[in-house]
Image (cartoon, rainbow, N blue to C red; front, side, top):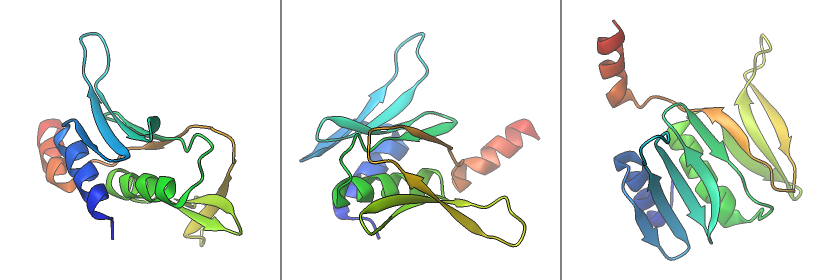
Length: 135
């Protein structure tokens, strides 16, 4: 279950509203000529970028419990099938496996700053609108 600050962060992302509380900030980028996106910051480092189609995460070398918790909250809400775990000090992300008979697979996340991009899940309440428009 997400922490209270993460619930507020997720609510701001869903509503595409700027938000700032203690070490966490949500910023909506919406300028003419630029694709709209929502950035999530932890201590001034952009740990998540959300566009209409994608979710990009980056720990910036800060592999802390708080960083992992914020990223996992966003990934659970906007990706739905990926999560970061820590085993013996190393981070791994879980994905659905493409191997028949294997449900999930784990991939190592390097300790240096590197961005990973995942598809963004369409929320169920918007899915009927998308299906209605495309159907």
